[in-house]
Length: 435
Image 1 (cartoon, helix red, strand yellow):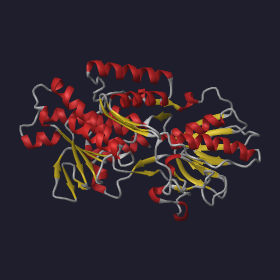
Image 2: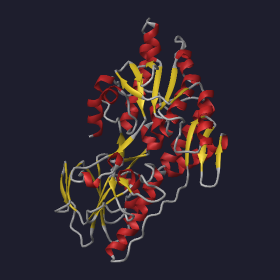
Image 3: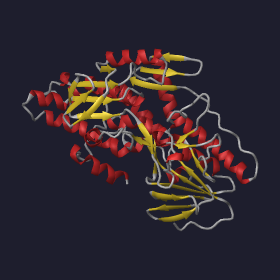
Image 4: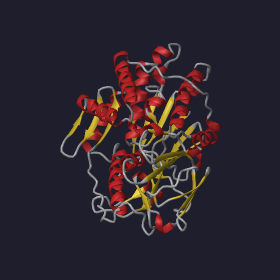
């Protein structure tokens, strides 16, 4: 990989997500050589992917070059690479661009969509975990409306304008709200010769309430907001299959829809060499101790979505969200310095700063440790928090200006079909774009 030898210990980080970036920043001015590997050369702000999918933002607004994040820091190296295998016995990593030796290895590969083995949904449905996937979804939505203009078959036209979103977590709720606002404020102007009132947005949740990880008050309020926007909220229904046109469930309810978005689960992105049964927990996550070290593997650590650190408060590991990953990355950075200096490490204690979700214009729900609120104020808090955690001054300014413009004009001008998309080619295209 053409990385120079150093007298400092080498820390190799696999993954440039929230955890990997936080760790690299923490180590950037320490006596360590930091090598970050990622198959993309940018950090992706996943909480706003749904706005790319619905034309509210362009992808460059929520992506930031990894090299620029740590630009100017000594002893930092980035390589665009896909990790193929971890060889713990020789402390080497095999990638598509060569091998590299490590003194300490940190796995921060994040998560990917979990289809739970359903091949029909995986091949015909849409995921929304990466920027390429979000652009594919945006193209599909717009192409379906273009196709709806051309058909005289009323049933086919309705199916083209129907959306099924599977999963009532923050991603599903926020996407459903954004689509409902598009239906209300944009589609009638873009397609005056199409009866867009017939478009349906269906949010399907297998449990008895949406936003199950938040308070019951937040769930009730979010559901009320969605219903006010015209979203059909279906609870206690599980989607079992999708053939590209018809969504079947475990009940008599069937949806005819050309677009199914799967937001019902995620799993950790695993690596060959760290995939033995004794190392893995539920959701393909690596078992780690309170110091982030992978159980039974020396000098190998894991943080973020890929790590499962069990505790009394979190028996199934920490939530697969940005905050735990950021806090774990910072704590591990301090611990690696202590480990190198021969000092005792500090166990990780998660400080829950709360959770939130936006449903649409002036509508959001926020749960904080001591306060819970919904509505307009929650919406402003949601915007402030997301702007704060965006990487890069330009991105913050661009996103803020876009939000202000969209709020005043009730518009989303990024509704562009940059590249055509066909569902039957989804698996092949996603592989090419991500790998």
